[in-house]
Length: 212
Ligand code: URA
Image (tube, rainbow, N blue to C red):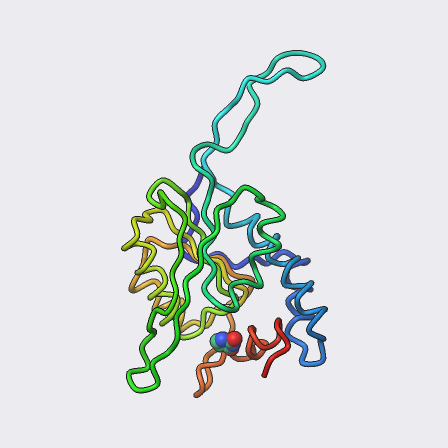
């Protein structure tokens, strides 16, 4: 199977249609959340497309066969708090046995660097496919810090799943972690002065949780 490239933009019509609905400022919190759940499953399908497989001998009603099944340890999903949580439910519906970790980072207002305030990760990360999830890859600072943390915790096979990416964030991730493929629904135009993705969809956490 061909290896997954560094950047995959999922141009499937269903993904693009749902993303347009999510971008619209008038879309309600409930609809935004539902669309995020649906789109997360379509993105998860892409990010897992080359997972390792093996076979298991099974009996069908007709005969025995060596049937394909996933190989190795259960994969790990790691949510980058808080917006990453919006992607978890949908992916867990698709991969119910996945292990789940959480990484919390905030931005120090003086240094502008991400500071870790929470970290809880599944065991044996070195033996799992680890998918870090955050809807918005903007500056890339927190994403890079989260991947640093995953690698320091033993992960070697990591992917990054996001809804939207800015060119600045993709470049920052590629420079810091060229081994981590990114799967996204869109590569948007740019970041604005406040670090928001343009055209984007605003603050993903606020839109999914109804906060300001
Ligand atoms: N985080 C968000 O929620 N939105 C952006 O546009 C950038 C970062």
